[in-house]
Length: 319
Ligand code: ADP
Ligand code: MG
Image 1 (cartoon, rainbow, N blue to C red):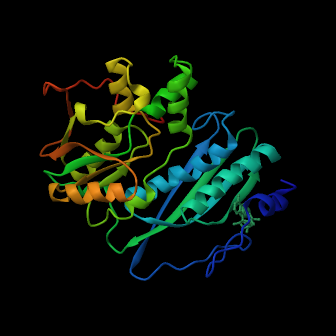
Image 2: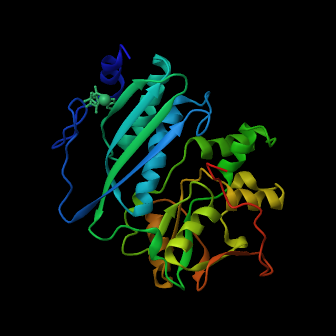
Image 3: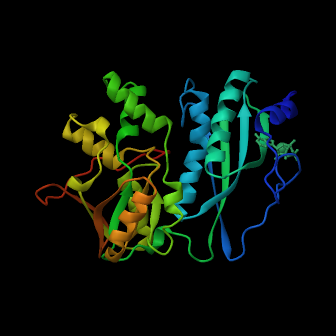
């Protein structure tokens, strides 16, 4: 790309924070605080697969980093820095201005400076790769494999809204303007509980962020922890955008809908009050939706205690 260096300088270069080497050298360099482990994660966003071509580039910039911060949150890690790789079919200045503004705004808000990356021309579509690095007190990272029998199962935020917007935008569901606006905001501007999550190590046992659907993502915890779970349908925090829709649609959106970027975590019952207080301090909502049981697999119980049959559990990229 002829203007590669100009483009990096114009849109993605900020003075490196103190004691860090950022954009402009072969490697970015920084130190972890002593007594901490490095937590790192990477995600690819492909045009046409993970985002629609006409999505607002500013919101896309925010989301590209937010989905990665969501992975750090699932480990209970706090963000330190990020890397951004872009493959662009052409240099679209308006797109770059919006995207970089959204990305860097999210980076500033979460003290996660952009310290490097790669930029290249692609054949046709946009590909966005983001890597985040965070730190977590040594040996204390939250894993999928630490759920214990008798644990409560919690979720942050509300469920189902992003799925409604996805159905609308892919043409399979009609929505009134109000519902559309609320659900689109959930899909296009996710807000993972980043600062809340940094307090979970020591309080929670296992955690995962909900990207492919609650049932499927909780399923990963169950498999890794070799246990089962019971969820109470009535306790699932339904997003307001779902009110008044058919029960089947509500249940499917809450249980199988992806792109949520909230956390599902397990904790001992002794932590209930402390977790509620922590959520209030961080201005988020948490709901206790079920418990970890002996055995395997997920059972969702309706108001009458009858198990619900799940038609499909979530999004599978290779299905
Ligand atoms: P190299 O050839 O050593 O890989 P590049 O020419 O690709 O270096 O990149 C020059 C500098 O710009 C490097 O410090 C790299 O990390 C940074 N950089 C490239 N693209 C981006 C981007 N999209 N966002 C942030 N930094 C970037
Ligand atoms: Mg390079």
